[in-house]
Length: 129
Image: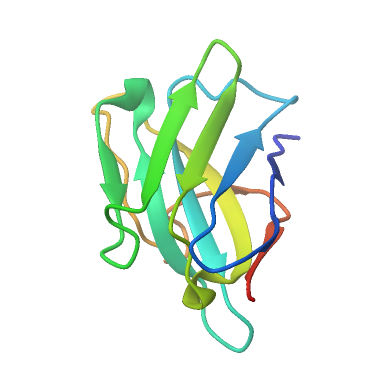
């Protein structure tokens, strides 16, 4: 069964940085579009960023543009999300998800059902002083 695992969450002060990782030991991420999503307490899950196969396209929600950067290393089978200048409103559970999309290499920053079909369990990010 295809599985994803997120890591790197934690407690950080406003203005701080964190790097989240999304990895799989059960399937190869090469050829998959991978997205990052977050869900704050009492709110719906929202898209944060995505990266297409072969890193052709990277997209960000307006709320994180200029602060977050997504990378993928297919040799290591990992996708990372570097988060800088964190704000309290960035707090929530962060999930990564994947969907087979080798050609054309596209991705969408959308948490709509069916867009991504392999999800991780999430990692908590708390931005607070």
